[in-house]
Length: 137
Image (cartoon, rainbow, N blue to C red; front, side, top):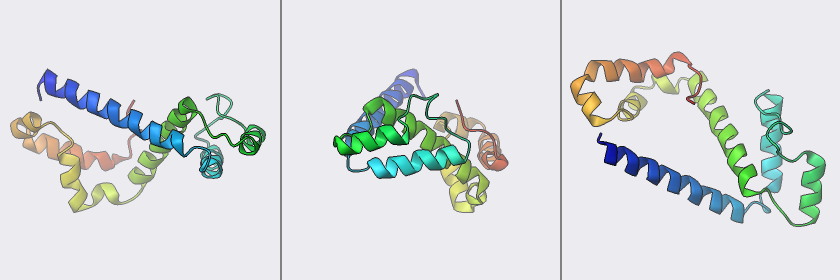
């Protein structure tokens, strides 16, 4: 994958994230209860500390509900990151990484030149994703 292609992919990913946050922000008031339950679940799992991440507590969320306000864009971004980390962990704890169909999906995660030059290594690495490693970065 060329530097230009990697840059283009990064820009596209950034655009998609911004678009997803915009959509979430538009519906933030309507989904306030759902976000509150998600934060509570992440806290119960020991994955999230609202105060540390500057996320609103239940009292603040109740005030926002009365005022017809939802989570802010930065709050949605933080909550989204934690939800992704939780999902990553759930997938790794499941049998999904060992599913033969999904191995192909995991192998396609690697850039084409790497898969062509070292096919066995890319395949082993994709299968190793089932080793229950921590989420990236």
